[in-house]
Length: 200
Image (cartoon, rainbow, N blue to C red; front, side):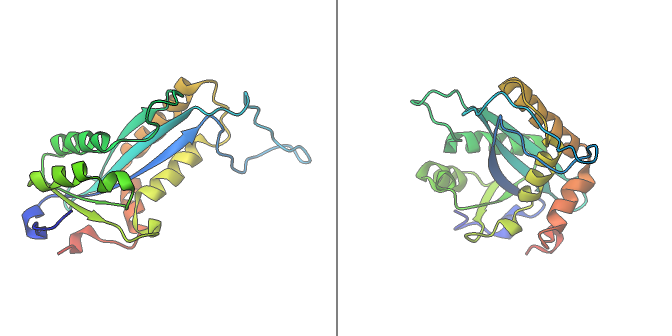
């Protein structure tokens, strides 16, 4: 998708990593404190098919504060409606990020089929402010958003969600905490071993 474009055309832009994940009403669990001999129990209201999908962008630019931008998508449980993000959802998210960041974007994401649709390819080809690269297959360790998911799930651990509104509120709260701590976002990139200052 980056054919015909050069890194020089995106100089001064933002290096942006994207990933998406789904969250259900069943809470992630983690170790916690409890009286000796008593196993802590989180009581939930039963298994639910209701899910919240989240697409996250982490954005890096030398000399600028690192940024996190996200968009949620709620599953309506209607079998006739799409449950995951469409390519147009990713397009709209990238347009939003471009407006917020005010500079070209070099987007790095995985080989999800939605990222590779003809519509998405054409959109990238038609906009000089957007350059897109695919990560190698099976290389989640190169995507700093994977560390964002770990931080988010840790903040939500052992929570019994009462309804989808409670779940999405917890997701938003967790992501906002990360947004306000740029050093955490920087640490996510450091965990990959990548350095945006050295891109050519």
